[in-house]
Length: 273
Image 1 (cartoon, rainbow, N blue to C red):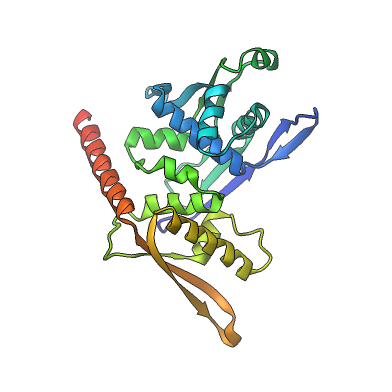
Image 2 (image 1 turned 120 degrees about the vertical axis):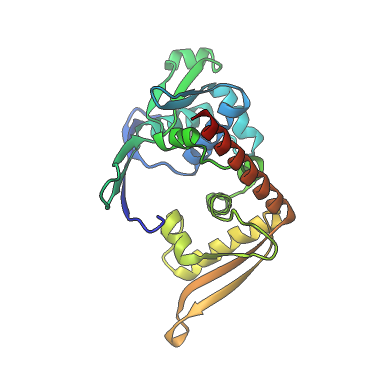
């Protein structure tokens, strides 16, 4: 990341499944959607908290509000699925180990702290309050104002986890979006960074899935257009693919608004210091 090397170790969450058996799970698409929705609830319902002295942030919510938020975005889940997802997020530990000197090692669950209601209480009242604490990197981003504004509604409307990943990557990296400054994304980089293409046994099948995600982003208005250029080696072997993205007017407008908000936030932060 930006010229520095890290090792990331993800330990699966051991949770009691609906049949009473203990099983190990890694976070998947459902957990990603739940985490994004929890951050949205923290902003929209004034239920979020930021405890700067103890360096903690999180949200107070109900399973009902979380379920309704996901349902509005076209990702309906049952109460049982939501409880399972929250348990996975609160028990899956991510260890980030820097290779260089002077950097701190970070070990934390995706949601380091969880206060949940009992099963009996949940059956009687799905509007009972839950409390989760966000990952330390989220808290750090809030504290340092390094987060970026983006179109949450559009991102949540995408049908695949891969399309959502690409949209978020564009928000983070394509901060200079302009019609005269296209952006390049490589198949090899996306495969390395996302982990979402490793399940394909053939590169060509993975690239087809990637192109389908690019097509979805174009149809949803993130792109105006994109071009694909294949890099081949001896005997026509496909080595890599470069996708050149041309942004839509709306994406450019949103990027400029995000840049301004980030600059204003940094200025306010510096003035407080």
